[in-house]
Length: 187
Image 1 (tube, rainbow, N blue to C red):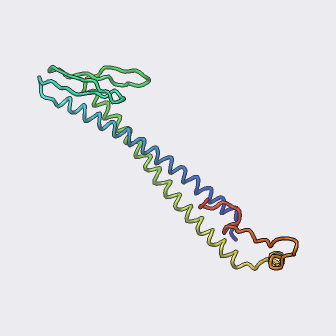
Image 2 (tube, rainbow, N blue to C red; image 1 turned 90 degrees about the vertical axis):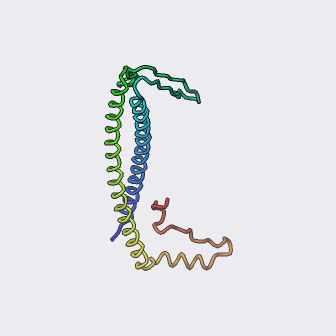
Image 3 (cartoon, rainbow, N blue to C red; image 1 turned 180 degrees about the vertical axis):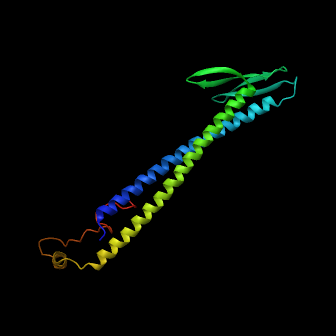
């Protein structure tokens, strides 16, 4: 016999799994944004490192609000970049070192993204299983409800509803969902 409490518990489990999946997918999107930023940084550093010896490099560095600063590197020596070393500490590093640091960070972030994707896949599988279990139990409960005869009180109430008294307006029975007042997956 299927009980409504079990069905309610499964509905809550499905809802919790849906929220967790949404949170994981949001984190994946955030990580993807950071990965894209690291790819752009690597491409810029690669271009800086790839310039011919003795030629100057010029570009514009955006500082926000639609404003860019001109940058010109003239000389044969490799330029330096300010690199966030952590905890608000910045250090000057040659472009090659900055690129190495950027690639190491990107690899670490990619591993994090892979872990999040794995969690997302596991959560999605669990969600699918819980939703299927909910649907099976709901169908079983529906079949049980259809198979059970109406209790005697219900038939009396129907008779009273069909023959209203002259003092009061006829009452319609309140429409109820398949599971009464309990929450379903549609709520």
